[in-house]
Length: 126
Image 1: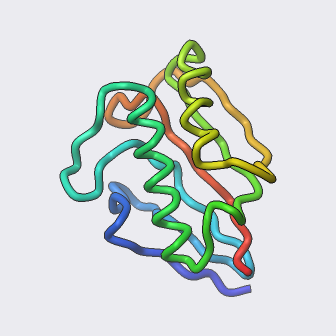
Image 2 (image 1 turned 120 degrees about the vertical axis):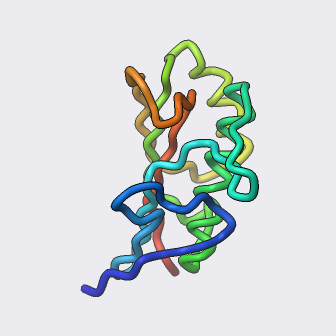
C-alpha cells in the first residue's frame, strides 16, 4: 500500500516532523487539528469558534485528499476541559448531521498553543 502526504494551504501547515494528512490506500488520516486560522495563524477565543476552525481545517485536508466530511468514519476530539463538551458538541453537530462517524472525546492536560480543542479524523476515499 502506498502512502501519500496530503498538503493544502487551506489548513495550517504542520509545525513539526509530521504531515497534516496521509492518504494510504482508500483512507485518509488527518493529524490533530488545532484551531489555527491558516491565513493568519490566529486562534479564536471561544470553544465554539475553536471547534468550528478545527473542523474547517480537518475538512480542508480531507478535500485536498479527495474526500469530504460525509466519508469520515472516526474522529477523536481532545478537549482541554470536559466542561466544554456540550458547546463543542453543538458545533460538531453542524458538521456531522447524519450517518455520524464513530467518535472518542477525551480531556487532556494541555494542547499545542494552549488550544481548547484538537480534532483528528479518519475518512474513506471513494
